[in-house]
Image (cartoon, rainbow, N blue to C red):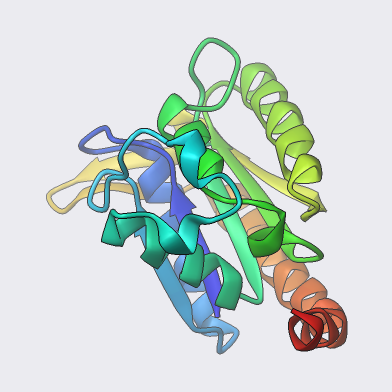
Length: 191
């Protein structure tokens, strides 16, 4: 199972449109997904009292997030770009997690914004993933507003080059998840 975390709370989000296209690419590869859209499944402000103990948090959503991250074979973190960085709602989500949930897991990084600031946001996310002992994939997915079209059913990722990159990203995430599976299995057995 791949955990998709969408760090945008905007209605009609380009980030969400990118995640939906990526989800389709992952499903086409036969992968099961757990879609954690922070607009639909909000979390309380992270409480340091439960640092490294998210499974004991009084809020059911936090316990569910920690369980989903722990059970996932890989994770995708998707963010809009705010002030050349990733969103605060995504940072808060990550602050609920600890090394125990992400260690040795492949983590794919996705940003929606202008190219330069999106890359900067993903560079910063890469540092956070490293702090959680996750394995940030070398490939990352950046989309811009020009890649998205708004239709009757909301925004959709339509640019062929962006859809092609989403397909390559899905393949890499699947391959890294398979490669890390034996390591994750041994780590879970020790826990």
